[in-house]
Length: 47
Image 1 (cartoon, helix red, strand yellow):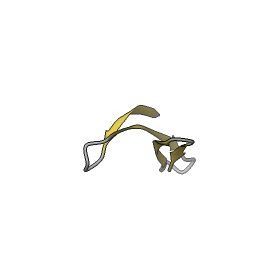
Image 2 (cartoon, rainbow, N blue to C red):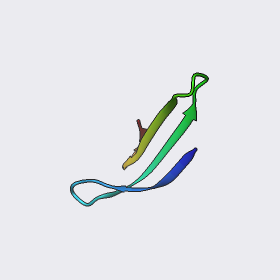
Image 3 (spheres, rainbow, N blue to C red):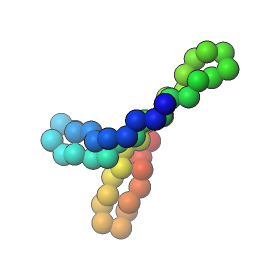
Image 4 (cartoon, rainbow, N blue to C red):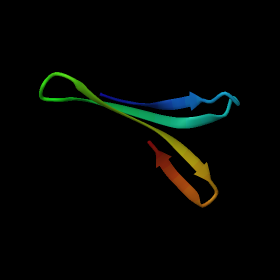
């Protein structure tokens, strides 16, 4: 499952957010979440 949207921090700043959940063979899930931070030339997704 993949979710994409926006997230708000304590300073009320809005940033792009994504999350992914993958089913493992034994029945548990692997979770990955990332936030997009754009700071001039430094455009990266942070995990």
